[in-house]
Structures are given as C-alpha cells and as structure tokens.
Image: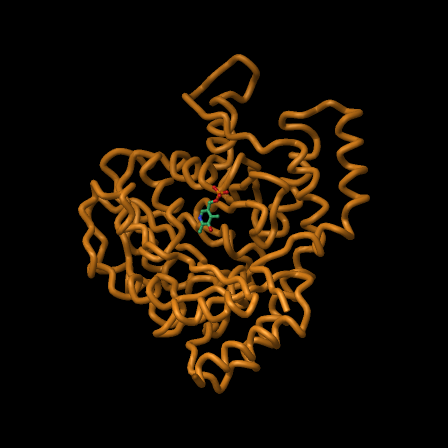
Length: 367
Ligand SMILES: *Cc1c(COP(=O)(O)O)cnc(C)c1O
C-alpha cells in the first residue's frame, strides 16, 4: 500500500465545479485586485474566527509582519517567539526590524506557555507571539494575563490551527492582532499563496489595511510607507468556497487522529497530547521516537511518506547565525527536532491507510 504524506485532490475534487464557476464570474467582473470576493471572504473569515475584523493578505509571513508593524513594533523591540516553530514566525519579527527572543516550549504540548515566557521578559519586550503549533491552541488565558500584567501585545501565529478552539473561542481571536496562512496544505488552504490578519481593534485594523496596500486608503494618496501584500481576488473567491467546509474537514482530521491514537495507544511511540479545554485540529499528527530516523526509513520502505517538522530548529539555521544561538541552548526544542515524525493525515485518507501506517509503526517498535 502507498500512503503519501498529503494528497489535496480528494478535498478539491468535489469543489471543482464551484471553483470553475467562481473563476468564470471573476473573469466577467475583472475586479482582480481587492475585488468583491476579498471583502466577502474577509467578512466570513472574521466571523469564523470570532473576530470583528479581517484583512486578507498575500501570505502568512506578510500577515505576521504587518500585524507587528501595525503595533508599531520595530528597531530596539523584543518579541518572544517559540524556539520550536516554523522559521517564518522569526522572519516576521526580523522583517519588522525587531529582535526575536526564543522560548523553549512545554515538553508535553510542544507549545510555549506563560511559565516558559515569563523568565525572558525584559524592559525591551514589546510583544509575545504564541504559535498554535501542529494545530493545538496554546494555553491562552495565562499568556493573556501575563501580557496584561506587563503591558505587552500578543500576536497569535494561527497558521497551523484554523478552526482550533480554546475554552470555547477560536484561535486567532485572543491576541491584539493575529495572523494566519492559507498556504495550500494548511487546514484552510488557497490554490497558491494567501494569508490573513484578524483583530477586534478598529485602529489596528485600519493601520494593517493601509500597510497591506501601499500605505494607501485612497488611490494615489499614501499615509505610510506600506507594502504590496494584497490577497489576490481569485484566491479569496476560492477560499470562500473552501471556508464553508473547514469545520467538516477539521472533524475528519480529528476522526483520523483518534484512530491513530487508539491504534498506537499501547505502542512505545510518544503520541500527541491535547490539553484540557482545547480542541486540536491536527494540522500535523506528530509522534516521537528515540530511533526516529530508523523509523522513518522503515516507513519509507513500506511505501509510507512522512516528514519532520522541523529537522533543523530555527536557532541552528545558517540564516539566523548572527543572533549567536548555540546548540544546547533550547534543549526541549532540540529534543523534539531529533525525535519527531509527522505521519500522513489528510482529508480523504482511508481507515485502511491509517491502520496500515499504525501496523507498520508497531511492527518497527517490536523489532
Ligand atoms: C505556514 C506558516 C507560516 C508562514 O506562512 P506562509 O503563508 O508560507 O508565508 C508562518 N508560521 C507558521 C507557524 C506556519 O506554519
């Protein structure tokens, strides 16, 4: 049996006609830039995220960078970011001109917590960027309390957790201004690059909307030096179709994850743990094993494709050498990166495929 890491076709196939119709409508309207579909998607996504405002943008990195710039975060400011995240979270801080300060995560949930953040606060700390890694919300109440106590902003990186819930509220609605990515393989993906910002603050909304579009609210009048970070109308039209199915798709991810968890409950692999009060949407199903590389090779030989999120932690990447981080500085992150393995999990994956992957993992651990 062949099991690819991800296949997007089963998810898109039933939507093919709807997508064709939307593209046809767009060709007739010719409103290719910030057209009616962008506004319509922004309204739907704001409601979906329990937020007042949404700004559609070009990608997740730009969404994070503009969120920070809207808060006037820049040179001389420190932003606390997880050490265990996709490197774009750090790039956004650097592109805004600020300095990323890394927090090792909790060893159980892989997310940063108020306890791991607290010792890192300095007089230069301006914001905390919780990343809801692999699809599980951070423990937001203590993080928001810590931020309030110290007068800090919170910017959620919600790229991996669209639709995740923490104590009855969606991720992307807790921070002062929040960002997400619609990279095609995210839980809600475009057919190309796209991203979004969500906020409940009208002045941050206005500022982020200016920054997205050349610093301009009225054509040829520029209030600030902005970016071209607009969401394509065609992506907004497609995202709007797909958003209507997101809850159903997340429920299917949760069903497949529950099947893995049950199949592997007596095995020696470390399984993902969901915190009470949180609903995990399994952007990734990440297990851990001491002989990870051997396990991955064994699964590859069995026709099962897996990935590692992430093989080299951001603090050890050549791109960030100038910050002077060294090996051993973030032990939990390094331990995760040495032992983690992401299993195939996608909408349309069959029970037989989940069971086959599980059997092969159990067979490996008995060798
Ligand atoms: C995907 C991702 C991003 C970046 O999104 P792009 O749209 O690819 O720029 C940022 N942070 C996290 C945690 C991500 O997973």
